[in-house]
Structures are given as structure tokens and as C-alpha cells.
Image 1 (cartoon, one colour):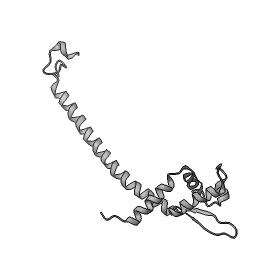
Image 2 (tube, helix red, strand yellow):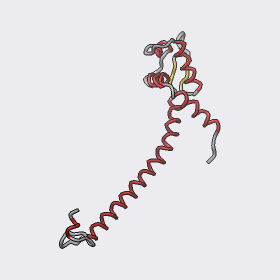
Image 3 (tube, one colour):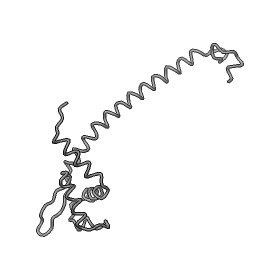
Length: 139
């Protein structure tokens, strides 16, 4: 497997950016559409300058972009960047799901084998288990 250091760097920046709850809430808000810094700052009890710094971190991570619309500078979510994070996560999720399916199949086979062995060991006429005395069967 060939490792791409640039791709790893982008993933690192994105996950570090998303580690902060304020930035995650900004991303959640931007998922509904573009917004200005003022609009993004409304629900927070932090300064607009602090929100602007959070946006810069998100920009550096490639998760958001800014555009100019006359006097407004709306911030936009970059869905392709989120899709690449989702693809990276899904790759590992699918590997582990396959492992769990294999484990489930193994356990089901073991359970079935155990049930068959138990059925073969009992005496169909008396319902007693082979190798046990009748007084032990009830224990």
C-alpha cells in the first residue's frame, strides 16, 4: 500500500479541526447553507474574532471556504472535503464489519455444533443425558 503524506497531512488537519466542539457546531450550521461570521457567531458566547479564528482553522483544514458577495464574505462548507473524511472512515468501518460478520458466523457454527452434540448425547427414550445416572440428570 502506497502512503500519501499529503493526504495524511490533510486528514490530520481535518480531524484536528473537528476535535473542537465550536468548530463542529460551525460545520453543523454550515451544512444548512452559507453564513457570515456574524451569523456564525450568534449562538456562541465568544467574540466574533474567536469565531473568525475557528473559521481560519477550518479553512486551513480545507473544510470550509470563503467567498465575496459585495460587502458580505460568506463561509461555505466544502462537501467534498467531508466526503473524503467519510470515505476514509468507511474504509475501516467496512473492514471491522466484515470481521464482526465472520465472528458471528463462527459463533453460530459453534452454537449449532454444540446443540447437535448435546442432542446426540441424550437418550431419546428417557430424555436422560448419556453417561449420567438418572439422579444426576436433574442437576
